[in-house]
Length: 290
Image (tube, rainbow, N blue to C red; front, side, top):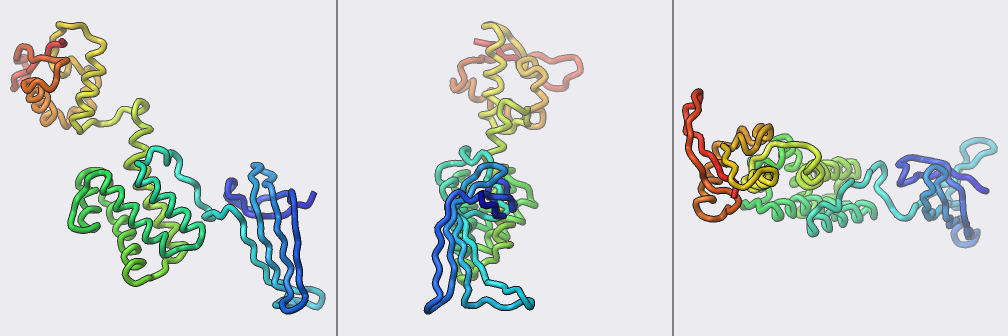
């Protein structure tokens, strides 16, 4: 069994490979070359690859008395982005966002760096569209992503760098360097992970703050399942220790809850008595489980 050293896209480093099959060609006529087509297998993880090894014998040069250097180019298929680990959980991405992201990876793998730069900018645009973030241009929309709480101010600053790169690729046909694209890809993947993937993975696993009314109602519904019809409790009684998850947003969430009960939009609760506890300055609305 022939062994060679080759980059493994799964191990993400140079590893020992075995050559499963090989076909060679050579010429010494118009242009001298040796070429080998190899099917190889990583001896660490069993990943299979195809290698095209082209040796330019025509341009060999002497580096010592008894040694010659032959310029060699090696192409490995499927192509890969060296040092890049696939985004874990990309199945959580919305259809269009995921499709553009995968096309960016394909362009990067194939060396189409201008298209990859455009695609990264397009991915950010697609995220804004999916989240209904409007604005006169991408600059304004990135800023709104931060003010809406989807990303931090620092994340927004980095995304503006993606915007600059995309603009340069589109308007100046400026080809970004591979190193620049690698960093830009990580920035966009951080956006996708923060907005979509982590949001899905924390559900049911980690208790987070609830600021949206829909999440507030879902939490109440879950609590009501463990109560009996006719039970009458204030909001802190309904939520118990989970009141900590809505504490900061409760001044905005509870009035909307009352409004929707009054409007008939919420049917699993009705308004009960209004009480005032000894140490409270405010009336305390109770709710009756239907």
